[in-house]
Length: 277
Image 1 (cartoon, rainbow, N blue to C red):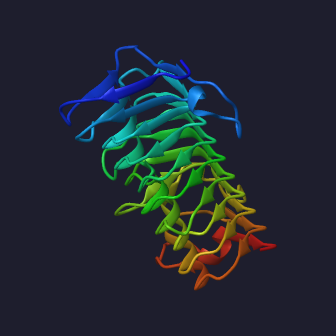
Image 2 (tube, rainbow, N blue to C red):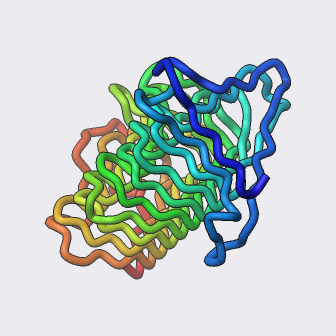
């Protein structure tokens, strides 16, 4: 409840684990813009960094964290094979904030991240990712702020919107990637304020919904002010006509606005609909 403070002492391998149907309801007080120390639930460590919170092994379980501050962990929150709602939380002095593995029904909302590589997924063996909403957050760490990039795994129904990403990050948003890229479904990247050295990176090996003139990847109304590449496509293989819609974005001060660096077997010119940027 609000005002609770948990301090982890002792071995660096200490973790708090919820599995076999267990879940956590950590609900502090306050609301957006009006949160005091007394409203928050705080979890930290003395001495060595602790392993963090682990949620795993039951797709029917879904934990909720509201107004929680987590610090001093190797990975503050690990989510595997289930969903979670994180709202109005703060993460600092962790090696990583959130690691998602084979996760679905995830909402990360109105939270602050000063950790490096804040939201991440495994490169290999990460499983499928779907129904993930990352919105209204602030990122001020280093590395990549938001990465959903498992190699040759499915990514579907992902929304990343209204996030503020500072110039301290080397990359703002990465969707897809790895050696061959990911299998992408419906992806929406909307109205983000991105000032990282590189803005948005897309890496796709294939498209889950192969319908021509269906805008599966929508990049819309983002402000991108990066010193290097604003929007880059490393893989976009096997897309069909009209799969990618890039519209109403503001590109400012970038060395390049849109970069396409990988030869594909598709007709590149027909994959993209670029308008009103």
